Image (cartoon, rainbow, N blue to C red; front, side, top):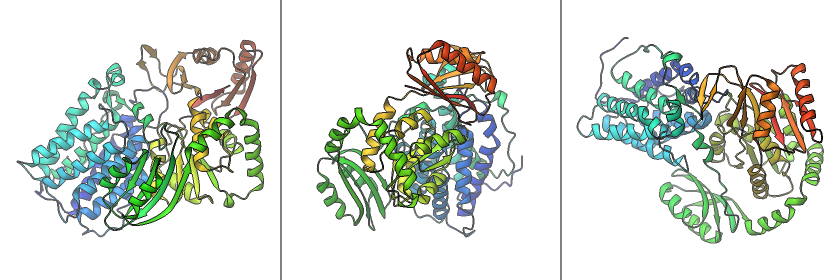
Length: 565
């Protein structure tokens, strides 16, 4: 370990950038250790990878910045880069950490420990706002503890080093306590993955303040804290459309000079339900369900110039959708197929963009109306920038995103704030859910009608998959050996065993599929022809009256992805 023995009381923009650069290197240095100790035994969108890639995006945004840039300019660039590079739920929360850090600093040339404490307060506030139902025992808890410790230390010892050292200590104590706050962590005897990443980032800043220039040895995977990377609480984050299906769905942008985002968010949200209000002092993007859109728009005209105003009567939509629900499937799919075959993509009114891995699955999604596919899924979470690029490349002004993975939903939710196009996210967590959603898609209806119907469709969908455990683990009383086959029902572990057919059948039976009419199977790239044929024979014997369709999905990691009707 090398030290330059330059423990400054204040930092310039160059030193702040050096600190986060060291943090990124420290996070990358320990990425594999975090990823290898995921509490869930399936190939996942690993927290360490997602946070490291988000940090990389933050630093790339600073390329070309004036070496003498102020601390506020550095922080602003880092925040922008983190947002565009955010991958997975942990990456999105990390991007909000950076956004709050920049906001908390404000206009500063140099910073001391009191400024850093204020910046971490901003990180805390913004990160918590990113999650609609914050849960303790996660990276949010660790950020809060770091902020509180930094604030307390800054009152008596306001140097950069003292405050950062206190933040690290507070964060580490909170991290060690996360198993006492979340049952899934306590069962596995593990700490939270995102929280571990936050500790590495803060530790990198503190090491920089101490003058260290060499990375410490990485933590070996075999002795690392096991990490709860599943973060299942985030599955509920960020849906723009709640259960209130009445009134008017009101959307618009307002551009002004001195908008107070927090005050406007509070006052507009009080005018209705399901409010999503994002932006800054110069621009707000507003979505709200209200019985009086005139009141909302009148308020907004006092803030600045309005643009992209769109109002839909949800009461009429709800009645129409209810009447259509039982008569939809074949006619809608036929219409979608016909429209896709005859219309030029550049003339689309509404585009549907889906995330998927595997040529066969991608083709199935396209056949049901998806306009474009963003490559991604398990272990390959696309960034906010990649999703935004797909939206901008679309010829449509209105776009529906199907993330098809619980760890991509938060990144998808960021896209609407970054484009002038109207973007809605249907929070699909699986390929079967996306297929169910697409069977309801009708390009001749409004985007809000389509989203409402897709939401209904996925609420009834059942996602079943078979994969191999990538690590040995005991979870929910089930002991699983590395390499063993496991069956998942809606991402929950259901069955484990050694035999392909046995695990498949027991998983379907556990799902409640006693008398299926149609079993659709997407076969993964790792399945042999002999295994596929043996499975088809066993299914035919078990359910002779069911229609069984197998398709070459080409997906990695998962042997079978199954949809049942």
